[in-house]
Image 1 (cartoon, helix red, strand yellow):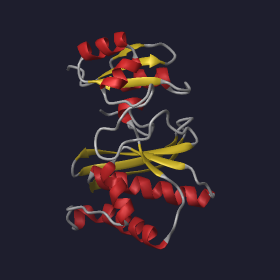
Image 2 (cartoon, rainbow, N blue to C red):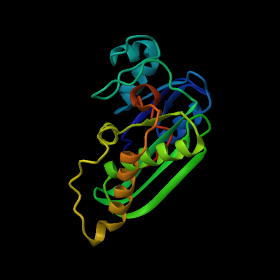
Image 3 (tube, rainbow, N blue to C red):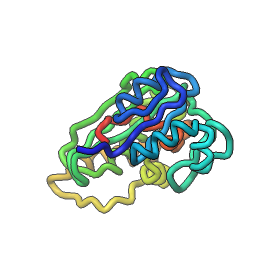
Length: 214
């Protein structure tokens, strides 16, 4: 089976072109100012590696060296990410299908929470639950850390304090709807100071809470 993505590491433990996210992640985890990016073909990845990250980021719409625009919608902040933060992500087998989500410490990769498998739901609802769980977790800890998510949709639902999903309510979706209703009630009855920021996948690679199933 052909690779769906190729990963370039310019600044990391061992710079080069890698064929999987896990291999790329091993080179950049714990490296301050790591520079890496994914490409759809080997040729593009090798060309980008030869050009260096400054030219490659500039071609993607970077305003300054080491910064990159997001994939659409609101742009992620320029520069490197805040390591004193948490990352959240969800994964689903089918959409709708089995869902799980987790939150990890951005700097260390330590798993802070994990929920699932949830029998039937959508990836966007998993992303929504992950952000709200992160907010509740940080509030319990008395922490104002930033939360990173790679889902624009889930971030909007959190801002709106309710999800705009078309998932039907029936016996097969009872589990996820129970969780979603509880998360929505939490949002509507709690305040928080934490920033929720779009993870800049183009500049930073996959979000740290990614399940590695791309």
